[in-house]
Image (cartoon, rainbow, N blue to C red; front, side):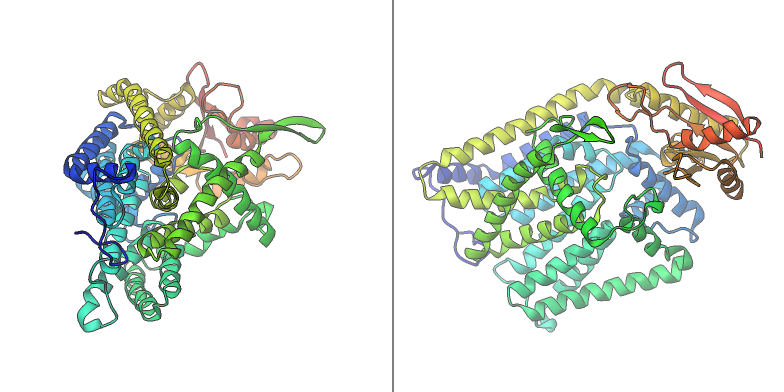
Length: 577
């Protein structure tokens, strides 16, 4: 007889009772074939969805460039942004295989599969089979998780670290013999938890909030000694890591504060707009709830198409323009938030510490993320990694509500629709991707990109092959240029430098002075689309707004070296100081 998280004997599911019990009995009796079948189908879809190219979002390229610099600039380089642990792992792969995208991405697929297994093991015997297998199916077959399973973003890596943490935290706190406060007996368990908590903060910086959530969880459960032990063993490993970091990397690792300052800026790419005030952070919070809970959550589960937006027309500066209709997204967010809080409440009321912890942990990180991140960073991955834990709360609440009634088919119907949506959307995308990845693996590394990106990346490769080795090219997507130029470094431009507040363009003399001080020799000006799905003629014009004033005042100082592409071309200019 299995036991629940509260230590009580779990019921034996019978085929002759309610719909829930019959389905639970079926899942329980066929656990092994279902476990392996779902995993095999998921891995198959991940391989069919395999993306052998770099994402246009460029953060994945940033990790690869950081790994390269770890290897070739050690110990004078330390990556301080986002997820410092992941580039360290990629650095190990770089040492073994060089900058090999396929190997990097295959390891991501491995992380995805192992993360699914550990999450399943964390849930096993602690939640009903219906909930367990739904969450497992979501992790294995959701199209968005499958997308990141073959990317060099840190999401697959993080989801594995998080799943391992959940597994051991559940083992030590929700088993028949939970960890106690007798260090003579339980010190090994606390060492494991402290170490994993430290790894979480290295896998993603925002997980500092997760550590606070763990401490508050113990305090809510009136286990003050456990809270102190968790803090103490986490602090021990964190202190040890910081000591090693200081000894090995020295001053190169002391850049964290400058990276954190970006989060306090109103615009992450333009510090001249000033820093956010308290009302600004609350504005971020509400905007991000609309974006992530009201929009991205539904897109990930397949209810909204990822390109679909609810819009409204507003008047600005005497002109009519379309903008996102947040009031509609708030309505949809209210539904998810209501279901999540209801599940959290039910778990607390039922003393189901297991469900309560998972939802508490994921919810705390999400709310912290909504306060901290600028709303313009509207990316589904920021909530996707926490959705398995959030689903535990949502399904627990719904399961508890329908359990005693005769309308259990409503929840089973909803679950069936969601699972069908996962499978259909993932299969459709996987089949569509096969000819693309086939061409990529056969050597056409640009196939699958739109013409604007093809021209940009081909011109980046040209810079490696045709420019002097000591040349330094300024580019809008420098990390992507680095990858496709096979290790040639580019000077990153994320915002207009030396901006004139009236023209919103660079002061030509100041811009040239900055480029000269940084030893920039060339400018790579691309026609990268603002709307990635359609060539509207509107492009990311950051480099244009730097180069145009220079061309007007000093036309002889920018000399065209190479033009790539007839449609949506990219241009390489040499700077003649």
